[in-house]
Length: 514
Image 1 (cartoon, rainbow, N blue to C red):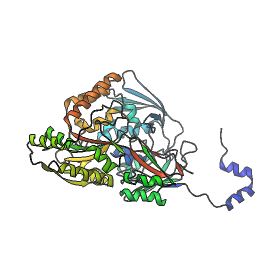
Image 2 (tube, helix red, strand yellow):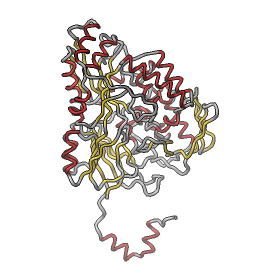
Image 3 (cartoon, rainbow, N blue to C red):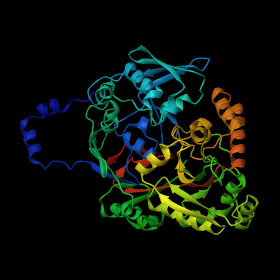
Image 4 (cartoon, rainbow, N blue to C red):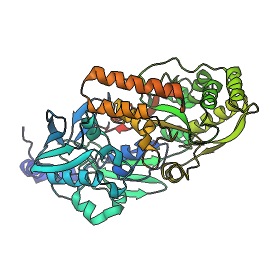
């Protein structure tokens, strides 16, 4: 039913009512503050490796498809898609009547501009690997686009649903060039007001948003708060309406607060320590096994995660399709010492352990791991990094200049499927600075399995190939897989429709303040 607009209604009601309305105080703006654990690297989703920057970018940007809170595919700027029999041509029907925040039209040409940019290696975008299989993007008509692939890629629709695949205004891209990461213009529910790089990102409602009745909030301030305790305190004082992650040790206290809701939800966040297998001593498989035996994961769950995690049963979180489950590594320091002796390190060795984040949970993991490894003779110097350090020292350096030895981090497959949970982390071509294979691991059979799995649409065949790849990785142990986290967030009870997704991103398109 078509609603009358405000002007018509006011006129119909007469000036007397209008005058009376003017005399009442203005309704308080529905603005919320969201406290998060880290600062943002860029607001260009194609050039961000971290889920948080992409989650915040969802304020202004949308993709053709998206994933709901169960990681199931949904249409966003696309209405439907079909695939050619040979698996190479994907035809996407686009939503009509959508505008970018600069007033220009969203159409097939805009899709082409974005995918041409993403799939061009010369642009050196961090997410290039997601799009390198695109041969060309063709405009069929204003609302239909053909994406032609170089080879069949059965998980391609999940790539289009990944938060990186945002539709940026072609006009803004042309005007801003490489500065687009500071001046986002999309079709999303909010538009940028301010990005103070050290302090916050503030967005306001986009009045021309295509989904009627949304957004319900007037504005969101995204505030990085590195210290876990401060984040929790901001909820209690009302300075923040939503906070993630919640320090596990603070969970019981927040639970007792009648104004707050504490939510522990399942995740696909896998925490692990990668070991640089191209460098001594980690080129020796016995050393890598020793590290795995030296860490008591049950104790780690208690000490660092207050029980809100489970020991890793594989290199993929169980919720990812085709994940293989194994027996978690047992805690056996005697076995670890024996393996080190066999590897030629009877007195252990010294090395470095870096972390991709510097919040207090990461610090606890580092300290715990340091103590555990010391018991078997491995002396580690620990460094917790902020987003800038990580981008420069880990993501930005190739194998020859990389200082990475042991590296504690986490990964969520934001496409919701096995390829994106394995290839970026284990395929030979994905060593930094290309992607995130920080172990610099390389195995021709694993590469072959991962490539073949993408070419087939046969589910049984895929399952066999992904099992083979995981069996090999588990046996060769380039990682010490640690835990799969539970995602603990808290919010004021008057905030609805704002939640953490299994990949640690956020969903907030229906968010409202009651």
